[in-house]
Figure 1: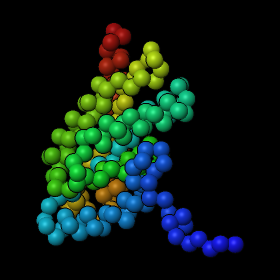
Figure 2 (figure 1 turned 90 degrees about the vertical axis):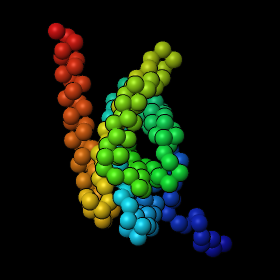
Figure 3 (figure 1 turned 45 degrees about the vertical axis):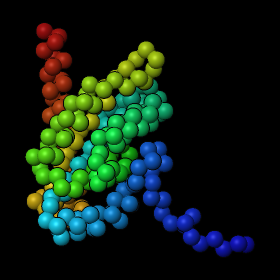
Length: 180
């Protein structure tokens, strides 16, 4: 038998569905990115986000439509990134973006713009049916919210869940008002 130790045995660093770096690669890269932010004294925004209705899309329109919705969201967001930004597929329908030299005010403005644009983006799940790709996002900023990846992820994920609840409540109230 031929011994082939090498790249085939290394953990996969790219998500096969989206082509993005995966969560493992985030852990490998974060220390260097954070070290640069510390050395050159600039903030680093960490966005934690997920597609709100991917499970509903998969249940209603099928697995392939859910996968395509993820790819469409990623394609849109990737076009919005700067060359120095990093987006990874963290897990399932959860993604993380690292944006060097971005403070909380700038990050919140970007979050608001991206969510608004995706809310109005029309994704074709069928030739005659289009749906919005609603995304919940939370932001944490290095070093103000923490200096360790785990703490930044935890804070950003918590803020994302708050954002999801708020956006859901607003959508629910709008539906109730339009029924009146």
